[in-house]
Image (cartoon, rainbow, N blue to C red; front, top):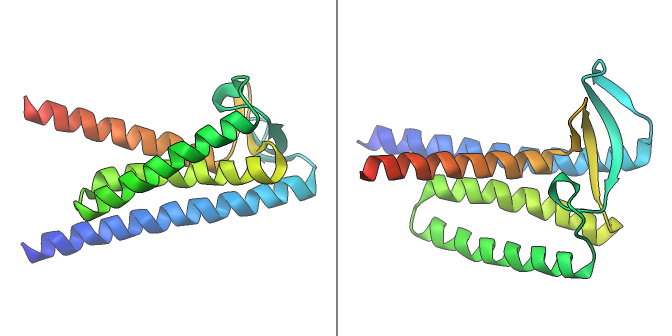
Length: 156
């Protein structure tokens, strides 16, 4: 039984480490995107490193300004409180999902406060321009959805 918990704890520690790496990489890539200005091909024309200033929220929905920043700050504060609750209750999988969302949203909020826009730099051909913070938010949300669906299916 003890081996199971140590293996589970190792997986959790690795996940937290990966979330931290994505957060740090996002901050570094945003710095490079702002300071290098030239587009670079990563996978030919399919994926480019290309700076784009995104003044709006997800999928370029036209919401911006002080009200949006205050709203994001408030949501991040609530998530932080919930993270503490999840950690205290040892609900590790939910904790990881919300931690990924929190770190991604925090990185984008830092951009909004510093530049008045979010720095996007991964240009996916015929789709959108995004950043690693968006990837954290997406996969954190996906992780939580799959966790809750599995949990609900198991309860029936």
